[in-house]
Length: 489
Image 1 (spheres, rainbow, N blue to C red):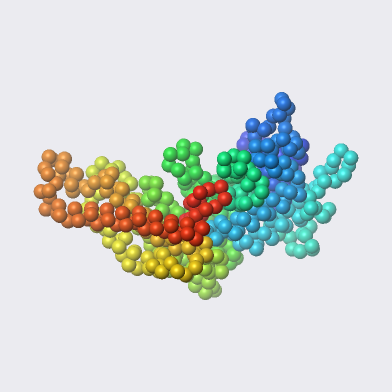
Image 2 (tube, rainbow, N blue to C red):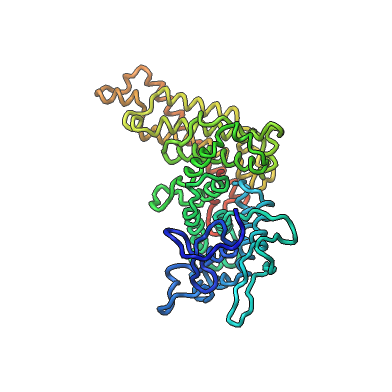
């Protein structure tokens, strides 16, 4: 990225305007846009409800323009406050979200963001009396000069800043959000606006189309911010996850030879996490929402510990992963994801819907799930002894692994109820009683087994929710239950 002030010109097509100072000042947000100008756009007044007051367009510096966001919203008109506020939201992201989505290096991100804010900050605005208006970080230095004489750094991608800020807004207890939720029935209108603006900015900057490491990370962070409800017609339903996977394939990250040739350990670690998050999320999403997965087992040949010939196996992942888990967690998650992928390909197809699930296919899934339980659940699930004190990450990680396994049985039971068994369907279509089937007793036993496992799974998941609730992990600001966007990774 090239630092320095972008040239002012009118936006073309869908390019987003920046609103800073007197409302509006329009030029497109690009990778050259100063971070201060980006924050001015992100935190600009809501539109269109408050864009016109008494028949005239509202000024970004008019306190009334921010009324929709509560009594403290007017502070967002101040440059100093915007910077302080953004840095606070970044810290919330790293405290809460990063532990589940460790795609960024916290120290590196903070350093680059501070550089973007203070070394490449916008030139100060000039008031009517000629007094410069710079933020607290403005030092009057050239935009290319690093702070404190340090080395010049690459500014943070604008869309990445926007999505990290949006994530922080979801969980922030800042007085501005508290007041906003209080005014809007415990829902933060401001946080929703930040999410929409982060997504719109990513679309405008073609994050979903142009392959790059930054764009992969941005897409993976945007996906869980979107509505995942099947009934929500305005939801994106895996669009950003699919975009991230396509970008990863374009970058050939699925090839061990390409991954191992990434020289920068930090960049290699990021791509390792990005690939496996996308891979696992694709598998689980497909089985949850009855869609075919984008990836097959033979679409990649890398393993969790592929960090290069000169690195100790898995060492890079351990240093990057705030969970501090060992290979067993990743191997267990991948093994279950492969089962989920196979279930999706066999269950969610027209032939199965019309004719039923073949008995041998059902037997195969039952065996796979039972084998996974014997090999992995005791190591990655919730132990029978709950006396040991858990922190948030340990508790949610174990509960998520445990619950995901039991969800597979529930999904299989739902498929049986919806589609039936093919052998039974074939017989009943001829007018013959299914009790005359030679394997009738076996079929009934399999159905009882799946039903019992699904019932046990539902009770187990309810128990796990109780464990999390008793530890205070199910309540977050602005929501009554633990946010599903950070429950799985």
